[in-house]
Image 1 (tube, one colour):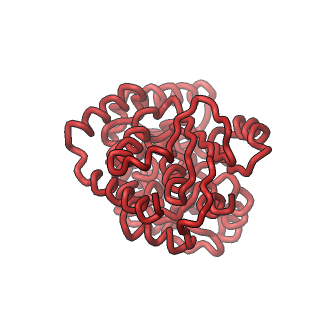
Image 2 (cartoon, one colour):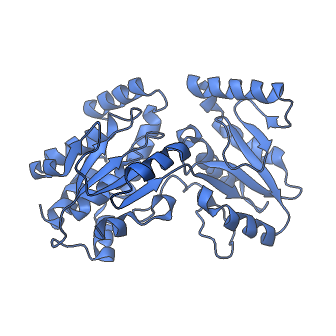
Image 3 (spheres, one colour):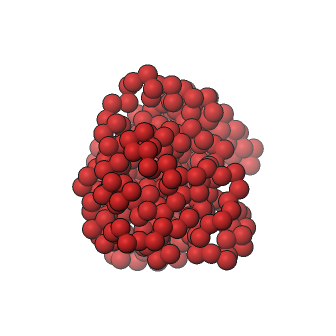
Length: 339
């Protein structure tokens, strides 16, 4: 396939994701939810809509081709992909980049997501049968020229050893934070709720910690976030919330809580399911110093403030990365072009 044909295939896939109400989609949603109850129908739809609107438009795809001067002279390589499964379709961007350039993806799926990405690949192949040569499913990666592996901090050490003989990108645990000024509107705090609660907070782009200025009124934040109280009706989220609430009580820790969220003052970035950490900041200088010190642990920073020398994301946009926003700040396209 030429790069133009691959772009057109992806654009056609995007058009097929316009209407997600067909019997085919309903079946896939039910199967994915049955395999992994964290993948609710609404969360799958949210992920598909973000992929459709941010990745699979003519404008986005042609922009990426122009930006990297990709053409038909690129020598195809075999790229091993170990995908995460914390939120629906989280590994699709790596597959898209490989396919767009013309590399073959040798894919080891996460046990948590063995339905949704294969479904999208099947749709691409239905659009153009020649695309089948670009996707290989594997339980164990062999005969690859490069690797992109996503996992935990523990597995990252193993991945670096295992893939040390080839060019590689190794991703590990990161979380996202929000910084409040205290002057946010109700609408902005509602949007922050999306950054916290979408996908039950399981994504690396979900906000797990909030910085607030000295004297900030946490009660107001609780009142606004009450709009998301229906999340407690999901049994797995509720089980985690109840467990963590009991754990904090037994440990006699100081925290605030309502019926669906625990707010705990902590210096840590990573928070347990059903909880969010908060920390007071005293000045922009001390905040900026902290952000720089912990940059390797942060996926994105959500705020409406202008923080010097720090890239930020608007409230409500944490889970809507653009096609050229790369996990851990490592340029996937540039990596693949350099093979």
